[in-house]
Length: 289
Ligand code: G1P
Image 1 (tube, rainbow, N blue to C red):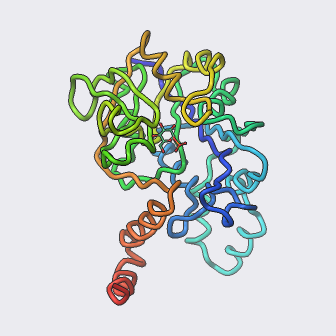
Image 2 (image 1 turned 180 degrees about the vertical axis):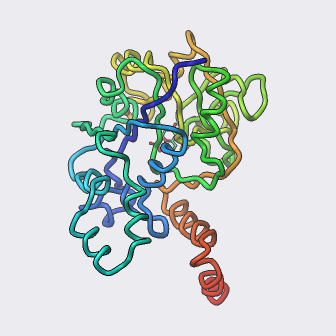
């Protein structure tokens, strides 16, 4: 049995420039799909997969995220005194338990690889999950849980992947696929934001990873890659020389809420999936188009 994955890292230091002015004073991870912030979807997915320690790599102006995962006594008291007990228990259900969350800061925006490296002391010498909250998924069970099932068989490093339109490969990390089924195939290489002509496949790294702690020393010595940033994909491409990487082409669909189109689509899809909204919302949309 491989070492159990207890810790998940959530990089939430990004500046969110693609959503200005909405993200001038508010973290982009607090943008909502229907009525839940993006970061809540990622935390829910991690809890479903059995994660017990939630490590947030934050930055300036991100204090609201810490507040979001804390009790709010005044609100709880008001809901209770108004008899809104369902809303109250929903709120309490969303919270990690006391002592399960840790926060550290990425002091400079040097890239995703650097953000992950900032979590090294909190993660320590154990495998960890990494969830990029820009990506939200319609998947049952959740994407990380599906990956965890593969990890229990294979150990090593796991990357969640999904197909992307070949013309869009240059927005993502792309893997080269070796032998094995969708539920666990060998990854033979990966490249960050390739030109379509150089992409080894159209399977993109969709922001869900299970990684071994040896990634940290590689991230620590790293130089800048695509876009002048310290790239996680480059460090993984180094680690693949000595450790196995398994791809999981999960059942489900991801929405890239780091782009306006993905974010708007996610809102429509998730609203249409909500029993309390679906029918009325469908009628509104029909009227519009
Ligand atoms: C990051 C990763 C990339 C991955 C993407 C998923 O890119 O570097 O490999 O495909 O997230 O959203 P970013 O979106 O930060 O440019």
